[in-house]
Image 1 (cartoon, rainbow, N blue to C red):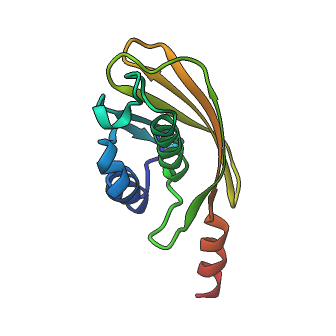
Image 2 (spheres, rainbow, N blue to C red; image 1 turned 90 degrees about the vertical axis):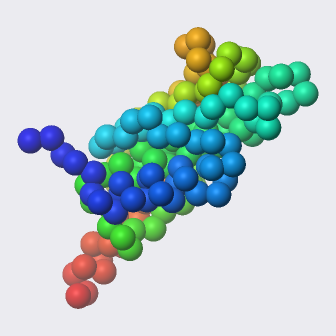
Image 3 (tube, one colour; image 1 turned 45 degrees about the vertical axis):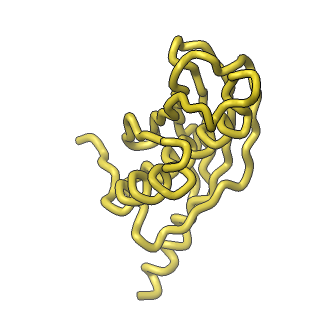
Amino acid sequence: MTAKLSPAAEDRIHNVIAAGPFGAHVGMIVDLVEVDRAVLRMPEAAHTKNGLGIVHGGATATLLDTAATCAAWATPDATPTTRGTTVALTINYIGAGRAGDMIAEAVVISRGGTLTIVDVVARDEDGRIVAKAQVTYKLDLARDRRSARRE
């Protein structure tokens, strides 16, 4: 049997993380989410580019961080009381984002009771790598387990 995301995770990913005010501002779209993996798209838009017509590094960082956050939340164990935040974000910019939408694929490589490590790659619409990142995300599932034991 294939594990499925919890309803709390689905809600957080689609309605809070990607569709929150900043995600909506840059047009973030969740293309795919499954346990420990997320693919997000940031549509090409003038307000995400710099003066040279290249996707701004900050916009790329937004996409990488948001995709990693979605992957970190992509677990059957998330509950409505789970809390999380990005702890560290290390980005290597590799090429210019020039062609169309930017697509990021994030995959969890390690999941502990508190810290989740996610690898993310952002590519332009032509498949060229724009940036790679590793994100440490604090998804406090251990807090949820402690709270459940007290109840």
